Image (tube, rainbow, N blue to C red; front, side, top):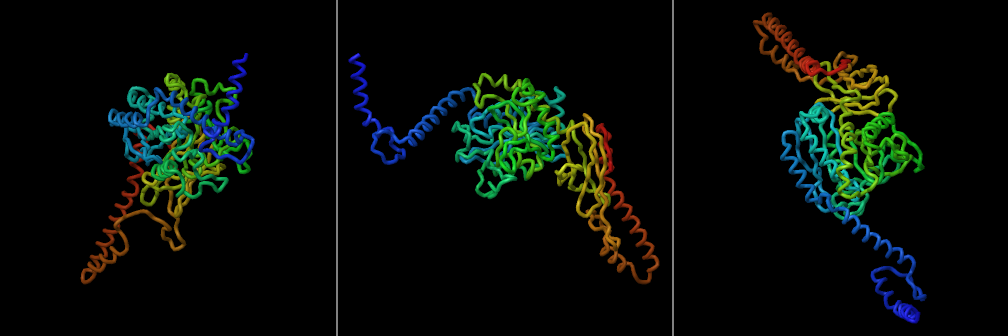
Length: 496
C-alpha cells in the first residue's frame, strides 16, 4: 500500500513538468490553475485520433492497390485489351497524379451514335472499394467480350468510360478530402445556393470532371462510395436545407435506375433501412455542391450515387465478395442505357443533314440535346408509360409523337422541316448544294448573246439536273440510316 501512495505522490509532483511538453505547438489560453486548457485537450485528442485513424486505414490498405499499382494495372489493361480499350487522362490531382480513364467500346476513341456511360470511383479518399471493383469490371468485360451476351451488348452498343480514382491524393493520405483537404463531393456548383460558383477556385479534380463532361456527351453515370448499402438519386438537397424527400423532374426515371442497381445486387434491395435499397438524397443525407445533382443539371447526365459497402474501408480479403455482390448491378445499370428509354436521330428534311436538336418529354421539365456530330439522342425513361416526345430546333418546325414504352427501348427518328418566311425563303437551311444564284447568274452571262435561245434551254437543263442532284443528296443520308436500322434489326423504329 505504501508503494502505491508513493507512486501516486510522485506522479502528482511530475505532472507540471510533463504539461508543457504536451502543450507544445498548441494554443493555450492564459490560466494559473496548472491544468491544460480544455479547448486544447480537444485539439490534442483530435490530432491523436487522426494519427490513429491513419494508422488504422494504413493497416487496412494492405492488399489494396497503391496509386502506382493502379496506374500500372490500368496501362496493362489498355495493352492487353487494345482491341476494345483506350487509356487517357482527364487531368491531374493537386499532387500531380494523373486521373486515368479506361474507355471500353468496340470502337474506342471513335465517336458513334451510341450512348456514353461513366463510372467514377474513390471520390472520397477513404472509400477505396470502387477503385478495385472498377478494375475488376473492366477486365471482366475484356475477358468476356463475344462470349457473354451482356458484355458483348455493352461493348458493342455503349461507350463505357471508367475513372477508378477521382481522388488519388486522398487515398494516399488516408482521408476523405483531397490534398487540400477539400471534400470533392461538395466542390461543384450548387443549384440552391451560390457556392462554388467561381470555377477558377475549384479543385483541379473537380475542374477535370467538369471539362470531361464538356468534351463527352454522357447519357448517364454513377459514382461509387462506401459507408452504407443503398442506391442514392437526386435531388441531394432542398431549398431550405430541410431533410425531406425532394424529387427532380425525372424522379420516376431515377427511381427506376436506382432499382435496376439495387435489385441486381446480392442483398441491397433487402435493406431494412432503405425500402427497396434506394433513397432520395435529400430525405436521407442532404448535401450541397454535390457531383450527382451537378451532372443532371449542368451536364445533361443522369447520375446515381452508389453506396456499395457498409464499411468505408473493408479489409482486402472482402473485395472478392463485394465484387460478386456488385458485378451484375454494375453491368445491368450500364446495359439499361440501351435496353430502355427512347433513342433515335434527328435530320433536316431539306438536305438530310443531322440536326443537334433538343428532345423533351411533355410533362417532364427537363430537356436533353442530341449530339453535334450524329444528332443521336438517348432519353432515359422508366418503362411502362405513355409519353409524348417532342423534337425542337431553332429555324425548324418542331415535331412530336406519342409512344407507349414497354420493357424494351423504343426508337424514334425525327425529320424536321425548315421554317419558311412570308417571302417564301427558308428561315434556315443546312444544305450545301452547288446551285446558288450567283453561279446561275455567271452561267447566264457566259451563255448570253447570239445563242440566247439555246442558252435558256441549256440553263433550264442544268437547273433541273442540279435540283435532282440536290434532292438525291438530301435524301441519301436519311435513307441510308433507315436502311441500316432495318438491317441491324432495330425494334419498334418510328420515323416522324
